[in-house]
Length: 114
Image: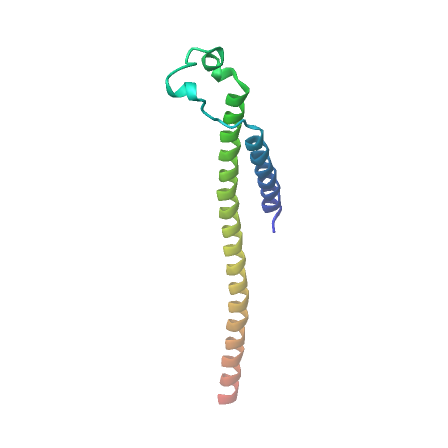
């Protein structure tokens, strides 16, 4: 594993824990019977909902979720690219030794024919 994979893995783990904590800290959104008939529509809470703690937590849940899924995609792309590069290096190394063995076999045949 490269250092970038380790770093992104640690950030991914921290963001996963942050998502769990932020979601657990949010209050459940339960509707009371008055909300069905349009009651409580002009309360102080509904007018200042954008300034509430619930709104703050909802915004951070969205931000951390976007970070989490972006990190997952980036980490998979980097991991795929590094694995592909390693497999190409292995095939080049094994292919190069096979070619040199074939060259030495051809040269030994030419020596025997002479």
